[in-house]
Image (cartoon, rainbow, N blue to C red; front, top):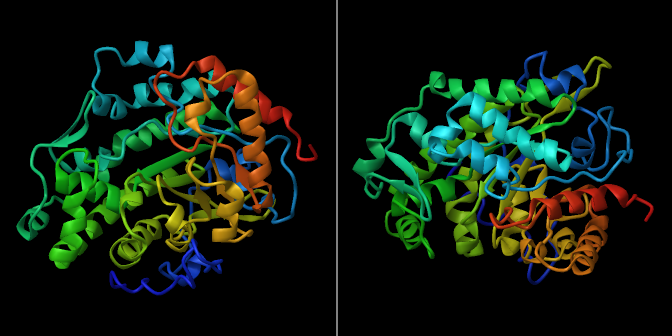
Length: 406
């Protein structure tokens, strides 16, 4: 696929008209279905009919029948993190990336919010730049700053010098996933990776940026170098997701934190094909349950500020589209089609509000998401570090109490 091959695939701008959803098979590599290990939680039946996967499938059980789960599923981005005192105690004296690459530590941090909040999924504790570290690239998470590279990647020579990521480098990731899955039982684990644009943006800038001028300039001024860099990022991100799924994760989410900085045409011409390529590494990973049903690991695509390209996030290869706090879920459904399950989108800014205000907002989000085939509650961004953990626990309880007939 060329970087421009998707430019005209959306029927119209979501701001001006509805968009007909395009099946992901139309844009993803064709080939034989990849098989998960037979002892995978999806295939043993442990997670196949969880509330989370039911909604990721659009309200269907593992047999493909329309059913309602026993409760509304909810989990939070960054649920394993600085808002938890037990996390802060465990992380003390250890850098972020070292924590991610310590299997016992990463597993325990992943499990902490599941125990505390009774959420319906664990999200694997890691970082989007871990594939860079595993490949041997000099990168650190600087407190108060974010990912910082020793040497930015800005020329074709820089890209050609990027190392090859060996499969053996994923060993600490797969061990951490296996440890976690062994403790979770019927609660699904979600794996994740950074989308190629966001990963490449960090690599070009060498650090976090407010406007991402570097990668946005490169894709126009030096498109060959941009495509080579984005292709490298797509490969390592896709393989990072695949390693987690093969080790036991039941779903995977591609995070495009900075895609909202792009215009619709730039995303379609210069980014979409690379995100689609990342998804091909985890395309249709699945197998057969003991009951003889074919199941696959659902794929979620989330970005911040991406309301104008939600339909393109779906086209890239996702089963589920994550929506940030900026867009009402009813409008999101209009833009991507009612057959597309949604995830989101409680506003993190309301977590410190008085309970009646927060409760009203949560109920409004549930109502707005009711027109989608499936809906998994989440925040419209990550958990702020100053959040009171008891508030999150109370939000989870409220969501679980609200029945599908309410």
